[in-house]
Image (cartoon, rainbow, N blue to C red; front, side, top):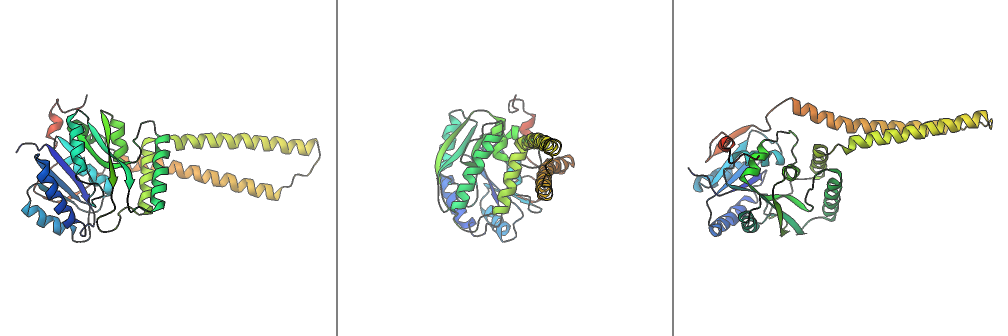
Length: 327
């Protein structure tokens, strides 16, 4: 079977409410696309009827490929699996909740045909988002961009098109804690943006509550920046200088002015401050050590439970083709 021109990679987790709407929207979009296309669904350990519904859809639609995990491994790992199994000359990653409009893919394909390897969707307006989500997202992406040594596009998510050689290059990156949009920026190649308005969820609830957002932010920063570790060193140096200054001041007060230094309050405050700083720095160090621990175990990123309309083995044939291997 020949390679499709386009692959749509769609991670799904407990999306039984939105799947009928997504299917209807995809059918209309695929009819207008007029390209050999496959749709790769990655069922990330859903607990509802998501997989059952995907089974029924895939039975009647051979372009639907379904990869079902043995358990929940997370959104970024689901994207990684989709890229492993996608066979298209170009691969688009999009969410299942229809916040990423399939129609924008047409603009991405046009940019890809112009010679761009990565075409990412940049949000110019976000509907149905709380002020807290909007503010924290804006702060995080700008903070992240300031900390990492690579240029990461602002106001973008994982909604993007990637050429075959970018997908092959991503497969070579084996880190356990994935931050796909940062990895794509690190790879480089010709990248551009298309603007779109991000709609609210078509149905269901968000799969990124505050706890997952914080973990996602920590993975992104620690995967691409060592500035928190350097900040620990700088802060330690600053506190050392202040400590020497306080010691000198105490000696002068004692031997020159024969003054009694107020001891109890100052000692308690100073000790508490130093202990808090030390614990914070140990925590930062522990974040990096923990990631090293997870990485050196060498466990697979995901385990496949079932597959539909596709081979159980990832499509790695192109890795043997020098023409597809990035130089």
